[in-house]
Image 1 (cartoon, rainbow, N blue to C red):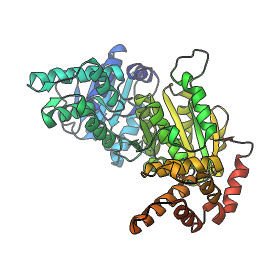
Image 2 (spheres, helix red, strand yellow):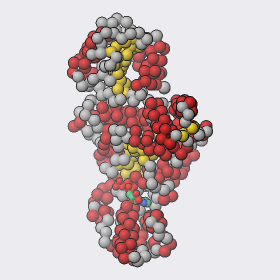
Image 3 (spheres, rainbow, N blue to C red):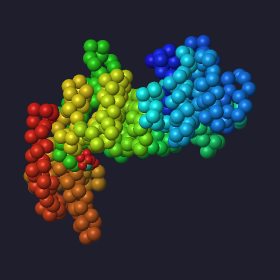
Image 4 (spheres, rainbow, N blue to C red):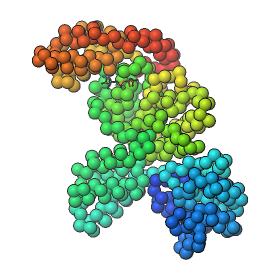
Length: 484
Ligand code: ATP
């Protein structure tokens, strides 16, 4: 359903108060106007600078004070949609007026309170319906890019974008509001006096910055290779290869793959899989940090999650990576007034209802902390357990990391190194290669198998120092997870 249809339904329901999250106020107003027109309702707007006014008419004298504006609406019998921009929810008197008004609203009267991240105060919890404006879709963004191009040309700025370039610009801007997208395109053009494909990397960087304002979403530009540069993990690679066709949407009989949960021994490549998967599929990778969802106001955390998920939906096709998912959706979070329970509810709902095109890779270190609902069949396509690499995988990991640092893997006795690194994680093997490289750099000698073996001998791997923890992880995984 699109935003206008969504809002029409809300206006037709009996909610007297809608709390709308929108980064783009002008766009929200356009959508409110359309939805209201459909229901034959007039639109009134209020802001602290202009006061209350019916659209197209002069403002009401003395209504810049929000309490007076709310009283004014309370005295009105006519139906209408009353949009209050950036109403101060931290003023208890305003909240009280709003509550009384919402309780007494006449049929056909709806208050819409808007803001970038408005949090519903506890007093209004049962009366207010939170609603998020979804970011614009690909068509809207493409129209915006073309409109901005015309505007720039009129101002004498050179525009060198063909149709493919326009689509690429629009795709890069996905997840942003129209206002933000327009500003970024303008900025890209004004920076060097032309708008051209070479502006794309700068555009991506600027967008990554915008998405990360509250630290919840991060656009990851990973310096990693493809899945071919991951040692071992044949189970996952085969799983992904089999689903490649279905992911492309080319197979009507197959459900699209939606994602998996990775758990396992630390340092064995969980994060690496998320990054190199996005690289292999040539999709953007967005990381959601669940620990950053928690805000101090009632409803704030849920709003943050809802808005982050809406942004991710708008960026599809995309790989969404949730690292340490247990930090946001831990089981038994009773001590936080139910916030983590509500977050989990919002998240599960999204997992169930989301459109195709968002492939979810979640990683968990502490699986025991995860709520069972999240692990129930049907949420993730599968749960994988990433164990320590076997001997063949260790050889491959040595080869990958040696080659990455300019050494010729064929010059080393890889089977002997794999044997010496029994019980080492991928990260520990990498650390040994890095350590030995530094050591020979100091002496000027070439790196040899013997140097690497010395480095390994001087390291106690986690599987030895915390052997019991690793065993506990394996016990959990037996029968619950597939071998990665
Ligand atoms: P943690 O649970 O500690 O976050 P993780 O399982 O996510 O660990 P990664 O961050 O993916 O581990 O691994 C750290 C680094 O170790 C990787 O960036 C990579 O360089 C190296 N590494 C780990 N496993 C592999 C592997 N299977 N193949 C190649 N390199 C690996």
